[in-house]
Length: 112
Image 1 (tube, rainbow, N blue to C red):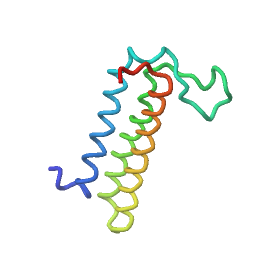
Image 2: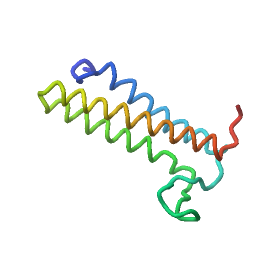
Image 3: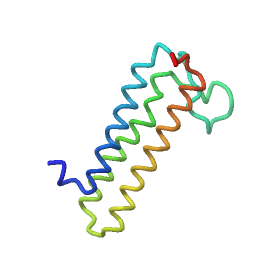
């Protein structure tokens, strides 16, 4: 079944990373403060703060984009566009991983 997904050797690890990020945020709730600076585009202050459980937003958005892009790669016949969509999946997952890890190290009381 997985082999029917275009570029499944890339898509499956990307899905795994996103699911692990969601699980990590859930497991680390006790080590995170009640609010975290998640929305950096907002003016400094309360507007950039969010509940710590919302730290899953980048990973969930990445998961949604993975599903959408995998569906699009099945519809698109052009190999270049398929590779571009898979590259976008990898880029979004990488950036969301960096964002989540950086915020955890910035505000979290991690047992490392």
